[in-house]
Image 1: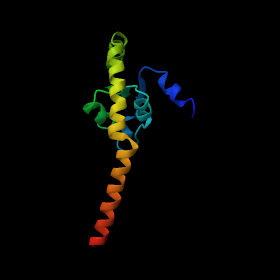
Image 2 (image 1 turned 90 degrees about the vertical axis):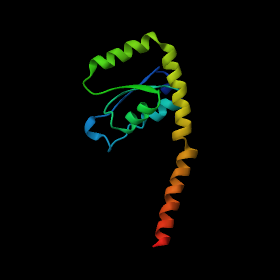
Image 3 (image 1 turned 180 degrees about the vertical axis):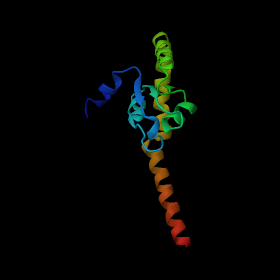
Image 4 (image 1 turned 120 degrees about the horizontal axis):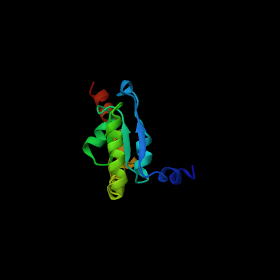
Length: 124
């Protein structure tokens, strides 16, 4: 665990994959580790997924669908010639992770759900 941050920081961009058939069932949580160390992701998977939603609303990575090798190659070539874009996406990824997926926010939302559930039961 002591070396995890160094290990995660070793890559410029993290590759994240998810099979089309598991959308809505599985969530590749490795995106949060990448974001935490200021690294963007290259997601290869379905657009209709939580990671796809993040990438559609925030420029913190790039996405290609399974089987679209040309798109992956194009993205990788663009990243090679634009290290500043990679760095900018990584910095934004950290901000997004802290604001949207940080413990303070998620714990607050979790507590809100519990409170609403309790209120609903009390009203019965």
